[in-house]
Amino acid sequence: FYYGDWIRKPGVAICSCNDGLRPVIFKIEATEEESQIDYVPVR
Image (tube, rainbow, N blue to C red; front, side, top):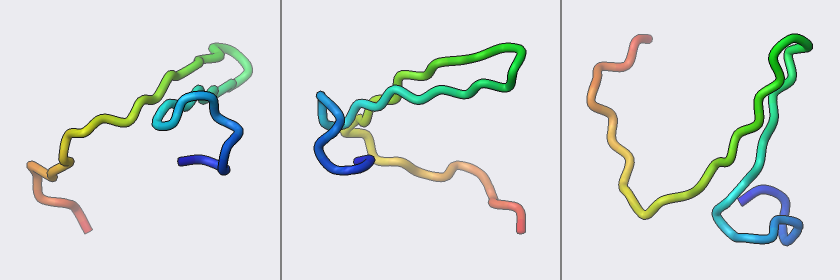
């Protein structure tokens, strides 16, 4: 999960997006839930 051992907690990442006007910080955490698609993908 991300680049090796530079993250303190495995499964947790702090990411940011700065569009110059409204900077946002995200805390992204892994879960044990299985993902599933409940819609028809558009191609």
